[in-house]
Amino acid sequence: MFTLPDDKTAAAAVAYVDAKGQPAKVDGAPVWTSSDENVLTVAADADGMSATVTPVGLGTAQVKIEADADLGSGVESLITLADVEVVGGKAVAGNVSLTVNP
Image (cartoon, rainbow, N blue to C red; front, top):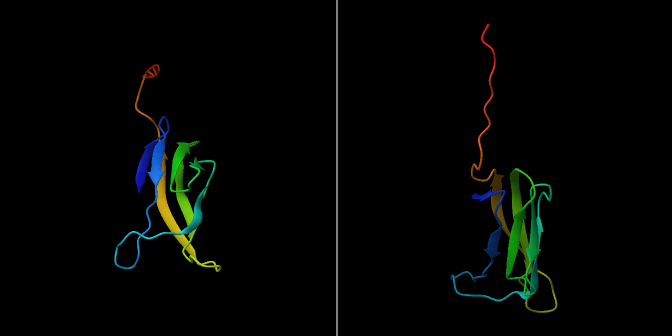
């Protein structure tokens, strides 16, 4: 799980490999989505091989990248997932609460 402070963005990239771990191509640009756009949004670059992940709220969501592994006229969906937890950013101020003792 990748932890992302809510006051930062993350650069994401995907690389495809074959069964032997060698670099492999996919047909067309992969499509990036967020499982919960109330937690984070994903904006893919034009080539689909990288994207910017932007927090919207606290929580967890998955970044989903879907590509076509069939280099011919057919479609063979290849899905890659990344789990992201959006947490509060670093402290920048403190709040003091006072109550009167009985």
